[in-house]
Length: 461
Image (cartoon, rainbow, N blue to C red; front, side):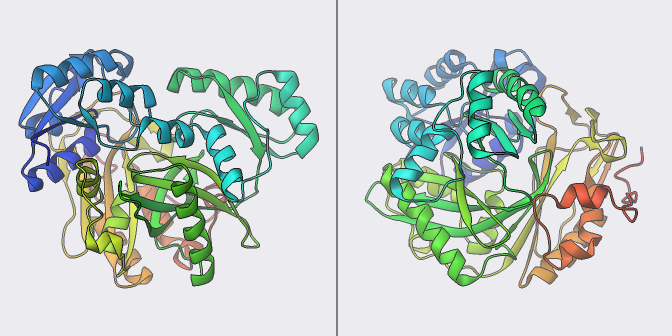
């Protein structure tokens, strides 16, 4: 087992990795930007090193500075978390060349599946259905128009790198195709340092379903069920649940087997997520793989009674899959709400600033993953998520009831948060009945019945 791990990330995921390391008896080294000097991951790690100024391009995306910190701190492994360099194959190669273990898949597997275009090619080769689209990267406006004429509108333009809804544009005609093509390229270059895009058929209002894959280096690959990530706003996930209210046992088995088959075809090891779209008729299509731990890994942990971050570390250290991972058994239902520092009453305007008072809900079946606390200043430079609220119940109905109770207890003042928005979703009859898809949020917000209610202290200063 490793003696010391550097966490190449920030916020709640850095804190999540630190907690797993502490339980395994592993020392931790946090890296941080000047803006994060007061972040909890810096305070709770065994050691910490500042790697630059606030912009991520000057800190969390600087491979040279992270590796310098790793050498100074004498670590034997690096956990990348999610985002930033987590899916950067070059970073994994640099770690390998410095004889520091990268806690994730091999650079080759990352290149095969981390790039959306090559991942689609791998899926086709493995016989896994993919959405119709371009044969590869679309280099020019003229080529985009040619692809559109071949497969027809509506279309989705997607960046080959990254995620989080960035570098994505829908197109319903040639004018929006041209505008979206250039807009997606500019956003992708800014967010991921890679402007390459591809085009695929846009499936109207599907379910967004992902399967959690875990594989060791001894040929054992399993899936730990699915998560439904269809509650999205502007292509960014808002609420996730496990298992999905859409899937029946037969469809779950077919999709799970396809996910395992694809992972095995590229020699994938460690944790990863296969993402699919499921249409109104039950047809499913592979869209991409996230070659890292997911934001929403928490609900899989709660449903299957496992620790995916610990499992990542064990696999990277050369261990076989843990028995309860090798023979997974779902035992409950879990829902996660992403709590963002945004004002839903003002079109989700970012709300950076000082938290005057912070009280997290508790009680049976409630989990909080957060780096926020009273007196903490939310910086304006990074993703706006400040917490993940997870509710677990024996049934979906009990998980929803528990989430509504927990949201009502969550007190955050000094900044605006999305807690009232989540409350509105939990009150919605269609959501409670499991009748939703990726168009749900837009329909709900455009409904005359939509109402944001202040939730205790969350919208009051």
